[in-house]
Image (cartoon, rainbow, N blue to C red; front, side, top):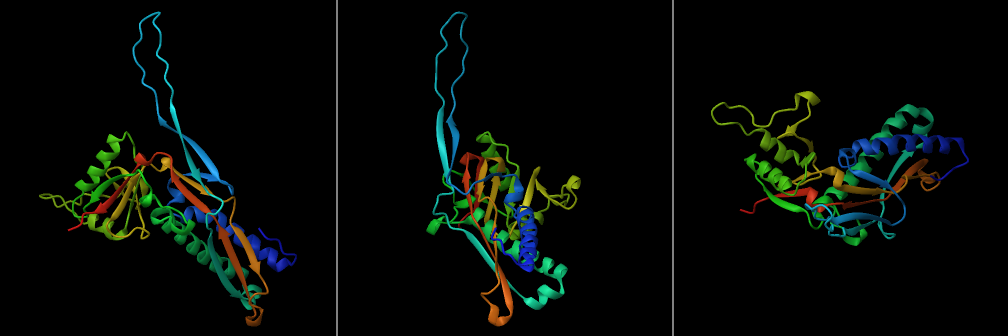
Length: 279
């Protein structure tokens, strides 16, 4: 974090750091879903097992067949990974007259801007021009068909996960698809097939798996995942810089936020990406 010698600048930077760093993780639907977060500003190499050994029955005094496990490696946060950046301006009158009001405005603007951009990248980023490759664009994931008029398509995805010996713990579904599925009723009884999880207040679960409804996914795309198999690398902390002279002719100041993230899958088979069938 850049340090400024003026008390006003220091106050603003402390406010922004406290309002941004902690709420960002809570505001981001991906960061708050149980992913493994690694803090590093340098390239990170994560070793992973790609194949185990075969155990068998061996007679007394017989030789045990030796075997080697196979290791792979996940390389994240390359040195040329681009940053997520946001900038917001405010007047000096606002700074002088209302510190509490400024806190509220900055929290809403900065957390919303950064978390929205981050979630879009972590979920659907194309990985082009040195940006993040999102979960739905990762190689090696399992795939399936989403039919928002038939909850059986969700069970098919869960069957795929079970076939991969994965216990998924999160659905990501667009609001359009979720409420279309929510409207589906059982024939005969007329009861809704998808009910709220009464143990979690107003939160929903689909076939026992918690649901995150997000508009960062387009209609026709859903994700079923074991989020413990998703690795997110986060640069040590957002860099918060006060720009006290850039907009001096307008009697304004600005705050710039810069941070870097990257994402990879420890085991791609832990993710099932559903897409709507082409008519």
